[in-house]
Image (tube, rainbow, N blue to C red):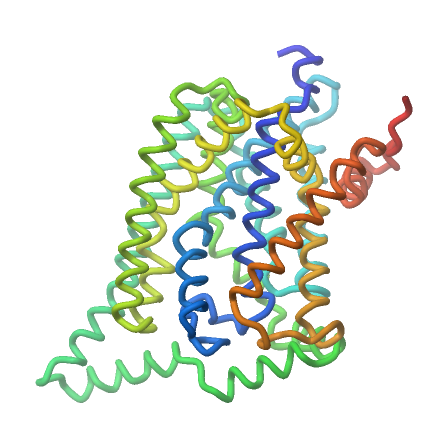
Length: 413
């Protein structure tokens, strides 16, 4: 690959990243505006009205986890692209990559402690340090081993979570022993969130910036490091698959049968999620069932949907690459780092006490409206900015820190 080709931007990667960062906000908005456990049930944080249930079902089937998965695929692909460019320009790929991951980790920790508890940047930085070890593997090997690792991890989660259902079934049996009943009660107590806990969490986030910060620095201080447990189960395997899809040309528009792959994987994935959503509603969002559905059963169809969405979006992007909307989505993807952290600033201002204090006060449908408005902001500012400047504002800061020197920002014509 020559230097010109390597430095040409891939609109497929940019636009995919744009769709992903927009979709991530659709999922994250619930975590910004409701107690943490609200992802399990539309009745947590709101009244559980028909509109709340409908919003939960839409998010669960079409967005939850899928956008993060696509973002992880693209992170692996982008890492390979940056390594290629470093090699062509005579820089050390290891040095470039390691400094990028170091500063991404710093950004992630700042994001967590000073803005929002749901940060993924620190997890991505640490996972990025691991997948660099696999950079010389072929695309086919990366895809195969990434899928194998993901499937094994999913199987382990499903088996592990099955113990909860098994204990529940034993406890529901008329002849259940006292030991079984005690263990079941203890499990429910650990999982259930009381009215007082909901009230305390709501009061915290409706409170002052200092109060939230102190909570992060004390009882929540280890959460970023505890979240690293997700790395081998999801993040690293998905990044490996993304590296492989980049190397084979699939993510840069050189794949085949995007429509066929996209339709089949999306159909199977959506049908699986519809079945799980139906079961959740029928069972009244039973907490043990919901833990199994959200943390284990949904993992395999999530991979199918992530790959299906990716294939369908690639076809859409290729076919309509010159369309103004695709161009704006691609610009939002080029500034994905700024848009990701920028959306955290907007949402915490809207929901937290140091801003408008809307935490726990609006329904899920209204949250979707806020997401759509924020999408419009992303699409409106990104392209005009990138016409004048080389990078998004935070992309420029990240690049300058990683390179150890101030990067050129203004585009001279």
